Image (cartoon, rainbow, N blue to C red; front, side, top):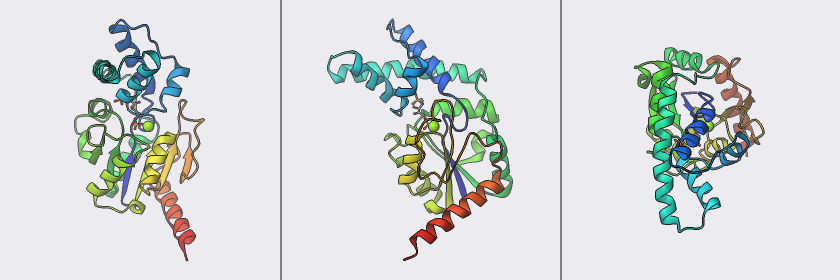
Length: 241
Ligand code: XBP
Ligand code: MG
């Protein structure tokens, strides 16, 4: 295992409630009578990318032409991102259990780290600078996000770009994800994927995952590496002609 590629939202931190609150503040700010409940947001998370999520919802609420709608969605998403960054910079959401240990062990033992997320760059900076301090960027060799990989999960681009920039083969890496779409994206890139689900994703189907955990409390680098070795050997056995 040469590298770990982390998803962000729901994986490195339980951020979706902060996202949901920011969406609702932006809607209220714009004088819209919209409020995404937890149940409604759980469904809407099936659409990855906040701008795409608003656009999808807009189309269920109005019948005006798409061009005007897309402009509205873009403006609402910009406001939402500002609110989200504001709340994350206050430290309202910490890293999930085991994440910081895995980052520290990997850094000490020369395992390379990357990020593959559909969230906006500003959100990654806010979360990781707040939780890992000003040198956070030194840990991650490659960051693929909504700006570098505009086609969102389950599209595999963020993972394919990360592999290309790391100059590694898929089987030399492990992806850590929380959702069905994230697993689909990583698997399409051929990357062995470990799932740590959360309240928003525990009902998802995770067929094809290397392993499924509630969180990483019991998964240190040694165990992750052993799970990776097992998965790669099993795949090799399956592929023996
Ligand atoms: C989860 C997402 C993101 C967030 C909202 O990203 O789908 O869209 O819900 O962030 P990840 P944006 O791939 O890290 O799980 O509003 O910036 O999209
Ligand atoms: Mg996620």
